[in-house]
Image (cartoon, rainbow, N blue to C red; front, side):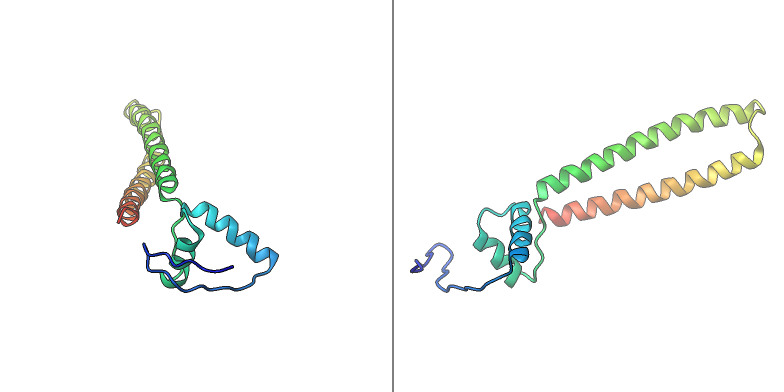
Length: 129
């Protein structure tokens, strides 16, 4: 088969190589999930772009948004529980040591949530560049 140069990208060289059936299936699955419109563009990115291809960024962003939303819902539920715990504590129906432990766990949860939120935002900014 004769190669026709692509003037748009100035691509005029052909690379040809063979892979195993397993490698081909793996490549096909990775290519299809990458979101690239052409095999050539995907391979150029893999070979010349240091092999870093982020698969389907819009799908990834949606999944991260869903995770963030679920985390917010969990946080809201914890806040409702915390209100009850504090109410029971004021009424003397909640042991003081359990209250202290509850507050420590809540502080850790809030720290992890804050760190995760910041990491998601940094990651999403990197994806959109």
